[in-house]
Length: 361
Image (cartoon, rainbow, N blue to C red; front, top):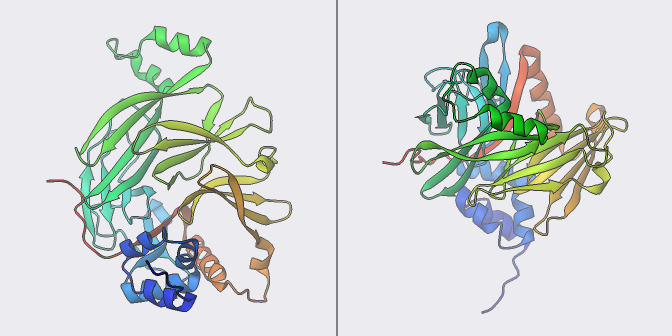
């Protein structure tokens, strides 16, 4: 078979006219194709030619607790305001994924339902409530297939909260003997529930076993490479092993722990670490407070951490414009939103305007 050497300009022109699904498939053809589709100029032109929505879904709290969800993008001159106003009632965004689906809930009570929706088509469905006996510690969503749509929602709940209800429910499956064993063994269980879109119902999975010294960091969860990822902190470990990454494989439903890059294991307590999705892979951002430098790491297919970018955040305050002015534009827009209220969350979203069947027949 003959091979053809396409120039970058030709690739740019072809891929910028492809629909979102085709463009994502082309990313596996070569590293050149993949890198091209993540460039700012390409994303801007692709969004214009294909009517693709791309940016950050930012939820903020206004006066009297009013919630607003705005689309903020460096590709557009102004934010798209109140993007989720088609829902029956305002809701807290739980997670979002690159497939363009958004999961939110109207309240934070244990028996509150969820809405799964696609903002570009204003489609939505009600997701039934999980077990009302459990208090949600983490809830995340990932898309495993697009044709037909297949997604899972995972909820983790701290088993220590069961003791609140045990006194009122003597027939509970969680016995005092089991609680006492966990205390003496330094083991702590996290209830794991999984919502399957194919069956449209919740089911109980095996408990996640951690120690009493393990805590989930208060940052957003990440969906990447077919798995969910959470940053876990252990306050009894030495400074070189305090942080680990907990991953949940969406297809096999297996759990795994991954160490952080060696240079971050002795991380200063003033620095900030958070998981991210970077170019389709699991990533980490590390903000060094002393130098105001931001490092971006990615986990490659060999499970090795590679430093991808280093950004000087001091340049954001300089008057001289930078080549990547999209960063400045996005920062100014986030600042304007923050002036009018407090930012609760910000999620990257990239989606088309094609209708999707959210719920099976």
